[in-house]
Image (cartoon, rainbow, N blue to C red):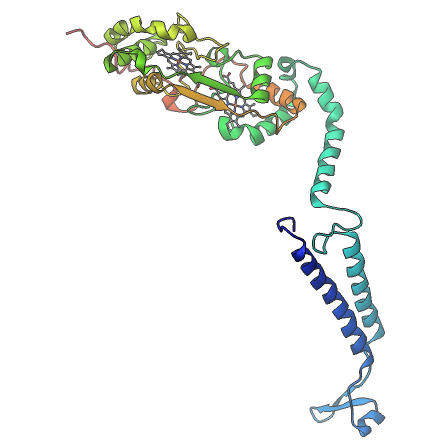
Length: 330
Ligand code: HEC
Ligand code: HEC
């Protein structure tokens, strides 16, 4: 009803409801009193005068009393219901009951009953909570509801969406409770600027891409990598002189064999030329700080092994055969 800009339709609907109920009551009253007009002969033996199948006749009695009362009760129930609960147009009913408030009260009751448990959870640091199976069971469900659409139900991500089961080396930020909680609460934005303009030619970019591939020992062309090395200077500010990345800037480690945005010359040339802005939206409107603490513990528990894997084949360079090496100098 709140969709309408004035109260006309509300009154219209309310009036139809009330008139229908009253009409039922009037019909009942009339039907209760009226008798079929019968001939004099019929009136004597109290029948309607209709005869079927030669000798079947119908008594001219009013409606049975129990049946009448049932009908009256229904009408009274309808009116009382509409006075108490919403049903008459936009009238809220004397109890001001609503589905939304009812649901919110349920949620509130649930929160209250879980409050002591969450208080116990938040008292522990994330890394310690990551060993508590009760917290992990709750955290897993929250992950499925709020995170899996991007990071996958196994948390191994996909192209552009980080694999959260990886060890610290492949993380954009430090693998710590603080970083995980901050990321979930505030979201994060990874920005690699487009740098195509910094290069004299396409060939120089392609050479640099081979140098980047060489950092992780991924298949590459050694000669191209050698000449690409000199242009790596512009990248070192963020990815580090040794290519190990910079967690404070969110610049990924280029020496591990985990490629968030895909491995290979084409993918790297593309990111150098066009840059990349990768956004994780803040989740603090959907989750309370206590829930974030618990889901962070779940995420932390997944990364325990330190092993680095990728969800899609495009994100790991094949170890063998090294398709692009070695290319012999002419
Ligand atoms: C809309 C998609 C989306 C949702 C939903 C989402 N994330 Fe993310 N998340 C991302 C992206 C994209 C990044 C990478 C951002 C970047 O490149 O800096 C990321 C990064 C992260 C990181 C940092 C990883 C690293 O290597 O440092 C963590 C931790 C994380 N997400 C956890 C979560 C959790 C837990 C949830 C659920 C509460 C969640 N995310 C929900 C898209 C999402
Ligand atoms: C201003 C800092 C900055 C500079 C300079 C920079 N990068 Fe990046 N780079 C980033 C960030 C941040 C990301 C991660 C984007 C994201 O969160 O998805 C990134 C991502 C990448 C990736 C993708 C890694 C993966 O796992 O898929 C490659 C490859 C890369 N950069 C190469 C380079 C090269 C080569 C240069 C030099 C031409 C360079 N970057 C310069 C910040 C930088």
